[in-house]
Picture 1 (cartoon, one colour):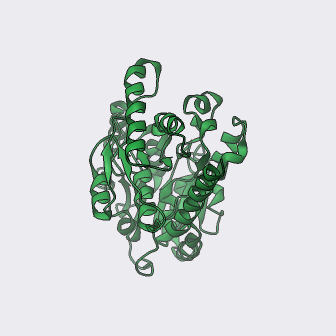
Picture 2: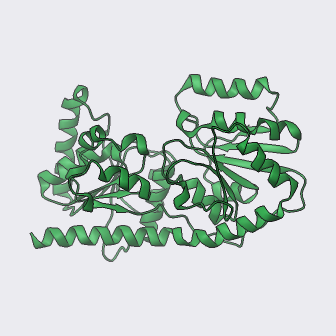
Picture 3: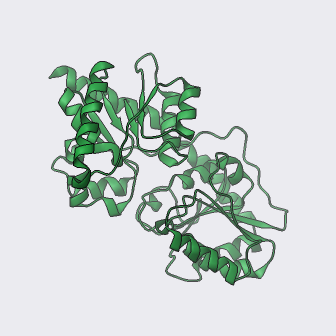
Length: 363
């Protein structure tokens, strides 16, 4: 059984669907536990993967009675459906899944998908990482950060999120006069959309044919959303800075862009970076620890210090002045993205499943 808190479209949900698409059904019979219906449950129906609603909520003392009931219901579900292994696809659902699995005497695995702010001793205790048979980190930097607080670092395995291969070779837009930069990710403070806009202002104001496009759902921080909207309005950029909301055609949108901008001050490697590379697009990324695991400076894009107010605009002006070096970076990015396929991701996770099950069989 794989557990996922929300069914809305997001990186962890997309990775789960890709994993299920490649999972060996002769070996594994997957089912999914999720707290609501939405994009994910529709995809599960298409894949003919059964799913069950469980009310995953906050994991704290205030919610203790509800969480006890949740753990008991999960355990009953595991027993009645003869489930052999539990995989928490994100840490939010980890503790109740781990408790239920331990009560049932079966292995449990947890994905660590968030950022460095969650790789602390307190979070390791709260989300019970040390109690899982394996913890899957999506970047080396995250695995190292977790290892500092784990009594047995050998339980940590790094598996990068995979991206689907492009259906056709990437096309490049060398001769058009307009330039489009795309940012993909939920509109949240830690994703830094305000910094992206403010750092790109000189480039945006230099030409009406320079566009900045944001793809991703709006978060719940009204003050942050208002701050971004005011920044765009104050600079007269409503026609050039576009917010497309949640989309399930991100690869197509990346294919009509010139470059991806990925800012984060907490994540290891945002999924959008490898998606853009697969689409044959160069990437402009922040110098957050972990980005260099995928992006080589000057080879597939640029690693920028967003504390330098001009770094992003300088890179974008370079792109506008001569697109040819950027096309070459995009071509190299597409070649390199083959290392991060969904098939490779699924094969690694299946190997972890097999190891956990074999360890249980030997007990």
